[in-house]
Amino acid sequence: MKNRTDGPFVLSAHDIVRHPGEMREHALTVPAPDRWGEGIVAIEKGRDIELEVRLESVHEGILVSGTVDSVFDGECSRCLRAISQPVEVEFQELFEYPGGETADFELQDDHVDLETLVRDAIVLSLPFQPVCRPDCPGLDPVTGELLTEESGVNAEPIDSRWAALQNFTETPPAPSAAQTREEK
Image (cartoon, rainbow, N blue to C red; front, side, top):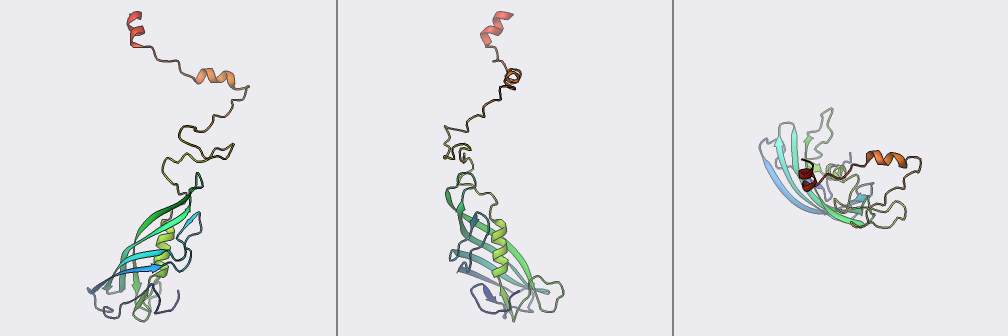
């Protein structure tokens, strides 16, 4: 972990350190320092990241909880259109006092550095296969053209060797009510 006490994601906790029960709230808007995300969607460098953070002093250190809001950009995994959608993530982590053996996050000179915590929370919440809309039809596998709701995917041609079996899977139409009365 980086050892620094300044930067846009660093918050001072000096007035609540070792005072269990004390709390401070912060609201920040910080530009993303780098591109966050390696898939087909990411938070682009410079995109605003809005944070609402609560620092609470506990016996073991400073408990940090809050929410982060931003917007990710990328491509739809079905039709390859450009998409831009909001992302909101909640996070909570304990920044332990220095000297602990297994601390993932440590308080450094009475400061908490939220960059790694926020980046990990955002990147893990990004969709693996994002879509522009839930019913996106995607691309035609043969032509590569954008499908519309009306066009649908063309049915695969049936191999002539299997065509005779198709008759066994098709169900006959249900008899109408008039036909049922005539049979009785």
